[in-house]
Structure formats: C-alpha cells, structure tokens
Amino acid sequence: MQDELAFKKRILDLANRCDRSGIYTFSDFMDINEQALFFEMEPELSFVPYTLFGGREDCERRMVRFGSPEMLGYAEDFPIRCLTIRPLMQKFADDLTHRDFLGALMHLGIERNVLGDIIVRDNIGYLFCEDVVADYLAEHLDKVKHTSVTCTVGTECPAAAKPIFSEEELVVNAPRCDSVVAKAYNLSRSESARLFAAKRVFINGRQCESPGSVLKEGDVISVRGFGKFIFKGIRTETKKSRIRVKILRYI
Image (cartoon, rainbow, N blue to C red; front, side, top):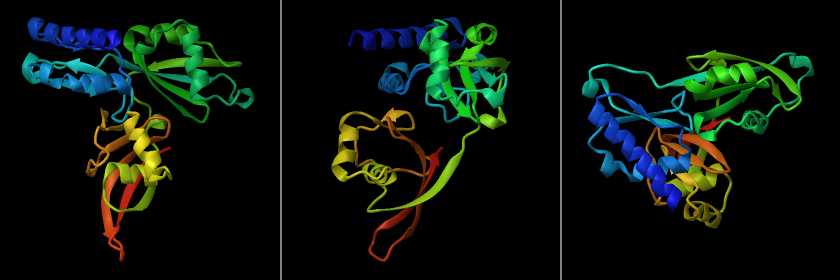
C-alpha cells in the first residue's frame, strides 16, 4: 500500500511540474501493474495530456510523457534508446534467454525501472532503456552468462526487433475477454476465471476488471504468465451459432 501511494505521488508530481513549468516530464519505465495504477489516476490527471510509450508501440514496459505540442508549443521525443547486445562470436555463444540478459544487467547494479522490454532474437538481445544509462551499459556490459558480447546504442527499434506474430482463428461463444482468453490458452472456464480474479489479465495496458468485457478489433490482451495477443475481430459465424475470431499471437 505504501509503495502504491509513493508511486501515485511521483506521477502526480510529474504532472504538476509539467503544468507549472511548461516542460515535458517523463516517468521511469512502468511495469504492467504500475500502469494499472496509473490508469486509476486518470481523473486526477485530466488537467494535462499524456502519452505512453516503451520504444515500440507494443512494449509491455512503458514510460509516461506529460505534455503535448499543442500544450507546450514544441515537440520532444521520449528519452529512450535501444541497445543491441550481440555475442562477439555467435558460433561459440551460449543459448541466451531473456533471463540471461536481465541477469547480466542486474549484475551491473542497474535499477529495473530504467530498463524497458528486452527482446531476444537469434541470440541477440535488444534492450530499450533510458538514455541516461545507455552509454554506461554499452561500455560496461561485456558478458551475458558465459558469452562475451558487444553493445551498440541506437535511437530507434531495429527492424530485427519488430514484433513477430502467428495468425490464428478461434471458435468461441462470444467475443468476451474471458471466452477468448480461455480458448487462446486452452484453459477451462474456471481456470480462466481465476486469472481475472488474480488480476493477471490486461486490455491495452489496463487491468481487466470484468471478465465479460467485449473485445474490440485492435485490442491488445496481456495475460501474466501466458503471453500476449491482438484481437482482430469476428470473422464468421458457425452453424452452431458460435463465432470464429482472429487473433495475432506474439511469438
């Protein structure tokens, strides 16, 4: 409870500073639970515009930017860099996982809130981080697990780190969140209900409080411990009055 109050105070302080000083203010990276707390504060934050971003549009860990060009009269990018972490000799490298990259970063004494998503493709890690730590990490991160690595800093998400999806069609009774989640992850109705009760289901970064929420085309559904997918809408109705829906599952 104390941590929640401290988090909300920091967010409100950033919003007020933007409003008073006429400058953009930025939070650290927020995990999905912190974003749920942030959305709870929307009525308190209505006096200042904001944007959420994490390095690419679908990132789970995102920071908030208070302010807009319309309000402040100028534009300012998010202070986010993308670090490409590549084995020096791929042929002799360990099989590196998300946990391996995160562990190496934590070993350097880096706080988790200055680090965004880590994407691993073909044994290469792509890390979104705050610009204030990017050069330090590039200089000092030289090993992941037992593998020597080299790091380069970029300002944009490399093409190799763009999202990859598998396209699937599911047959459900209705486009309700609980029904689609159960089918997407091969769960029973009771198992699906427990995920909602445990506050592990999010729609577009917002905690889903109602299992019966009707999904809209383009909604991004995250289920902690299971994965994430984009709901692409209803395709057809079956002969038994059920519906066939399309999802794009993140790989």
